[in-house]
Amino acid sequence: MSASEKPVSQSNGISEYPDVDVCIPVRNRAKVLPRVLDALYNLDYPKNKIRLIFVDDESTDETPNILKNFYERHHSEYKEILIERVKHLGFNIPRVRNLAFRHTKSSLIFWLDSDVLPPSDALKILVADLREDDSVVLSCIPYAYREEDLWKSSLPIDIDLSLGCTLIRRDLLEKIGGFDERYTRTDDLWLQQMIKKLGFKIKIHRDKRCLHLHTIKYHEVIASKFVHQSRSLFLLLIDGLWDRSLYRRYAYYSAILFSLMFLPLCPALGLIFVLLLIIGVIWHKSVNRYIHVAPIGLVITLGIFLTFLNPLAWRLARKR
Image (cartoon, rainbow, N blue to C red; front, top):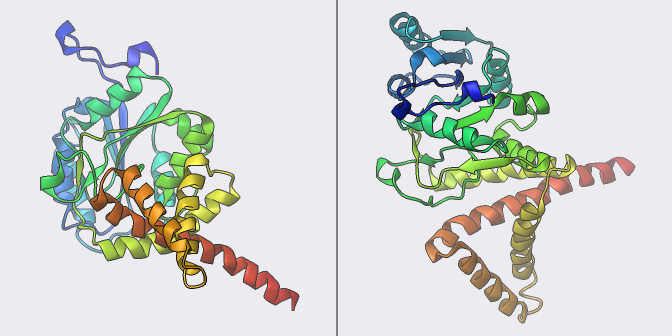
């Protein structure tokens, strides 16, 4: 980012901000979209520096009309408002993101999910993050799923990176060729590992939250992680995107699974199992947090094993 693009302090009597493209994938969000658009409109950032890009994945509810009304009321205030309606792409979110990315022009791209309410100072905070450190290519504000959790510094379920309220440097996306469309529901996990591999930094705000309007149920998280994240982790392994933190994390959960599996054969393994539980609680610094996180880690690990066994069994069957 050049010096001329950096925000200048208000105390200097100047308020120059870089242009930002705000990309919002949307499909059938009529129930929550008015609230999201209100929060978007109320962002504390010059509207003439913002280009809004909506990609509507063939919504069948009132979403198109809501977007049209927003455009008619506010298009003169923004640098540009673009609404593209595309053929139904199902749940391939990275494909929708790539379509939005093609319309971007600015050096900074703000990704906002259509069921997420950003805090009013979100853009200022995220732009400042990328301004202060050139090695930071992405900055994000994690989710809270209840309004009373907005000011809490920790979540009951671990989230490393979420793209629902995230600012990314355009040159990063150009360098990696956009989003990998194989990671249909885990593009955030893939992007996190790509950034680590390239040696850049990610900033995640632990003391601030955006409000996710979709209530997450724990059993739905477990099911989703088992099906989608385990497959994605298998793809990451094939793509050479595993790092030491992932190896350590799933080696730990694998050890728990194997100690449980062979416990009936060797009761002494019960000591190892207890020791692993103690290590997990110490690592997470909370019994309650560990109780929430450990089942997810175990389910994902089991899913990775099954994902690995599927092609192996298929190849063995073909040889016969």
